[in-house]
Image (cartoon, rainbow, N blue to C red; front, side, top):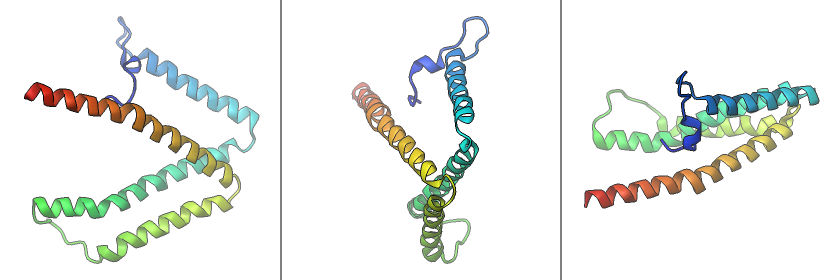
Length: 147
């Protein structure tokens, strides 16, 4: 899909395994081991980051629900009723954000949120400067081949 460099997708000639991706994953795991040795709070921080990832995923679902509902309504009649979505959806967003903010007040929560913000910044920058540009280029190339 173009999200990562082709280097990660290269397969070993004999074993047909993605050795480069396995190597990169191993480095990340090894980094986790070093952090666990150096920091006694590593588990708490890791659990907080995992929880934040879970909450972030559900927040994105709740935020995208109105747009997805409109697309579904435009394409066809919905097969089910969802009463009170105009109340439940914003309430869900507010409650998830409150839980996310509440993490700041737990042990290791400040470090967790700082770590999450750094990772989100890196991932967003990577998407914006690498993946998005690549997709735009691919889309432009496809249009020129069609014409």
